[in-house]
Amino acid sequence: MPTLERQQSANKVSLFAAQTQQNLQQVDRSLLSRKIIIIPALLFLLSLLGSIYALYRLYQANNLTQRLLIEKETLRQRDEMDAQFERARAVQQENEQNQAAILRLLDELEHVADGDLTVSATVSEDITGAIADSVNYAIDQLRHLVQAINRTAFTVAESSSHTQLNVTELAQASELQSQKIGDVSSAINDMVLSIKQVSSNASQSTSVAERSVEIAHNGAQVVQRSINGMSTIREQIQETSKRIKRLGESSQEIGEIVGLISDIADQTNILALNAAIQASMAGEAGRGFAVVADEVQRLAERSANATKQIDTLVKTIQADTNEAVMSMESTTAEVVQGAKLAADAGEALKEVQTVSNSLASLIQEISNEAKAQASSAGHISQTMGVIQEITSKTTAGTRATVRSVGQLNEMAASLQKSVSGFKLEQDPTGDKG
Image (tube, rainbow, N blue to C red; front, side, top):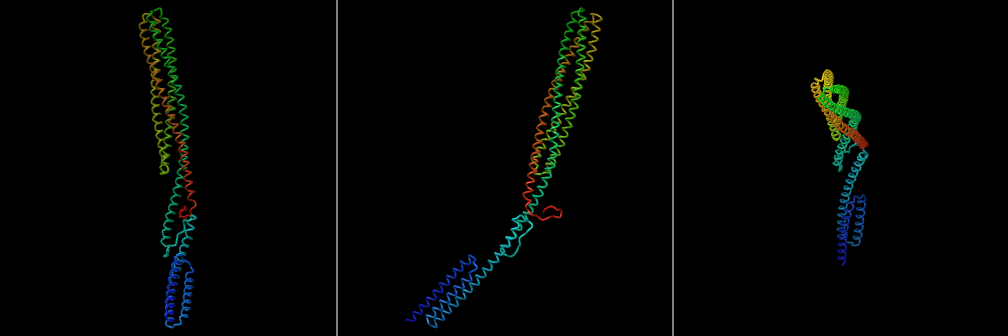
């Protein structure tokens, strides 16, 4: 019976040892997963409790063989616990090394978070080695990106400043051109009124010439009246000649004004070309401004073409005016000759009639020429209106361009400010990089 009890006690000791081992394994897995430093202390405490309990049961058994078995089992469990303790200590040491490597990497990256791109992470054989290498590559790429942004922002700011100055000068030139065109339009309107007056006088001269023909048919009794009428015609022709001469002088002034407009158009074209060059230097950021500069250049070319047309029309008016003056002078001479013939004898009435017919024809031509000149002057006035409208659009476009360039300059300054917080290495030229 005592043997059976000792056997049962030994079985209980073995069962307790197995449970203790299982509990130790569970505790080992739980504590290792949490990476707690007290693993060795718990293992040692549990091992000590198991040993004490085994000795207590061995003392109760009072059996040498059973005691040896218990001691052997106890030693085996103790060896196994020692092995687990060594594994736990190795895991703890590895965790401590990994934790130290992670803390070192975080300390190095703290400067990067503050904008310092001159630092680099330490590449080692630890668990953070590959991460440090990737971080160094990212820092290097970020450093190059910040340097490129700095250079681009500086270039854009410098180019936009020059462009803004050129466009401002272009806007001032456009405003001056608009004022000059307004003066020319006013002069052309005055010229149109003068030409209409010439046409009206020519129509009146035609009526007088027809009256002279009628008087010539009435006979010698109306010779004196014919002479008076011719004198009146001569005076009117002289007055018409004076007005036509004044028209020629006005045409000369128009030619000078047209030359001034042509110079302004050339200057506008040059300024537009300079603006296009500056826009091309700005690259992608200046593409919108290049379109505006191209539109300004086309407007300047249209202005130049319009001034050429005006110059041609003015030359035509001058030529026609000279011919009209010559015709008027010739007509005056013929009227004087006709008056002399009428005074000499009534037999010269036929010749007077012929001269009167010629005079009527010439006056009709003068009237037609005056009407043509009035039409040409009206066309010139319309052309000047178109030029003035184009110039107004050019001025508005240049002002919009000035605002756009100002916004571009502000964007470049904002871009420089956005990357100014990064710390970069200094290159030999003195620029950040």
